[in-house]
Length: 415
Image 1: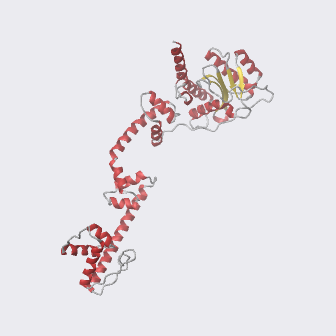
Image 2: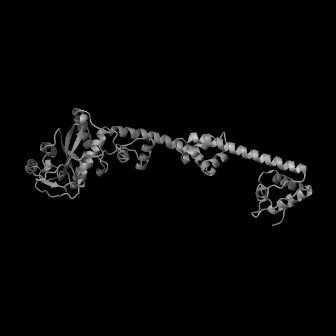
């Protein structure tokens, strides 16, 4: 490549730029001027020889002694003064830089008191760009400037998403409130989709987290199964298969405590249809005698118009193993089934049902208060469970709707 013909003025300006830049290297200055590093070095050494200044010895890495902070004092008083002035300017610049960094970090400590996230750091830079240089802010916060500007370019899109999220949160709260505060993201998603809103469950979950909308979490279960060692053996006809191809073929039942104020309690016995998980029978009493579970089974028979030919599965509670209950099952044409002793998994669907009932009706409270309030609360939930509450086993349809669609599909096939 042919060498360029640089004017004396250009050479003098290049030398002056190098000499007046604290911590400068031949490489950095030459790159900025578009000249060869060796050419710039030649100009500087020639100018120093002309002025009688001693050239500094280059280091092994191509840096001068001045770059390493080992400036050789000049014999010329004027040059000595110039070197001292340059050093003072360098120290003042370093002090200003440290002061700026200290101010940025002091403001950042207050800004990030709630947690330092990447987006928060971008926002901090944007909030303080009029006070400090963006370059310096990014250096102190360990950010890439291009990433910040990319984030800045998406401001309008983010604002639009936030507005959409607020509108969606309002609809989520409406569904959440209608569910008694029980629904999590899967059921909320199903409800909104049925109302015509095309929405992804992951987005629903994200918005619920952002706006602190949460379903009700599980409470610790209480053991209610007290087996009767004298009861005759009943086989397990379910083998943990809690599904059915048709309504009215397989039922399951269990008992749970309903805590009241003052350490008292009521007992709830339920009968669920395995096909739709519909609660077809229940009974609430202040005792756990056989009459409690018998009343629930009789209600199921009235609801279904009879139970003849069906199978009823329960745990080994003394009530289900009693002679009177066995006689009632024979009278109704019901075949009994029981899981293993002390194994809750053999009646897991009922256990899950009762856990959902109590967490959604108690909503974190320790008890229901008085017996009247307890009965009304549980009754309202059971009625709503069948007619409106979405069940994951039904593809997030209520038990009644799931059965209605099943019957409609059968009629269509028959036609």
